Length: 107
Image (cartoon, rainbow, N blue to C red; front, side):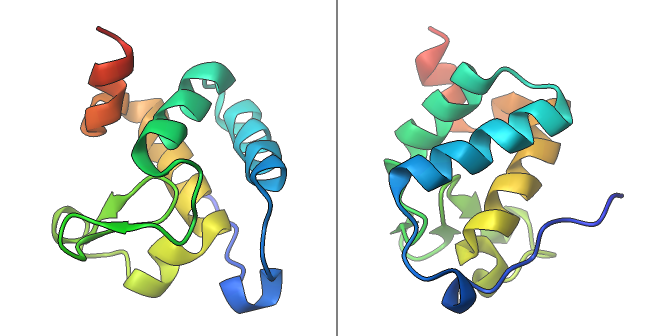
């Protein structure tokens, strides 16, 4: 596995939605996935809010990584927008259907 971007959220300060979109684009290009679909899933999952917490505090970040299903990811990592987006891009390349929003936008 390639080294993922890991940057502490405290180091990044507040990211704008345009900055989030820029990193989504960068990762979609790196992993060879469709940017518009990747963006649509992220928007559906969290509204591009990298501090989003859902599913009774079990899903975190831009792509709402569901920690019970991914015990190798920590809450801190899931809330790091760079880690969250790159981890999700790697998974998305293999199987985008693990996101409920993928099914919703592809009806």
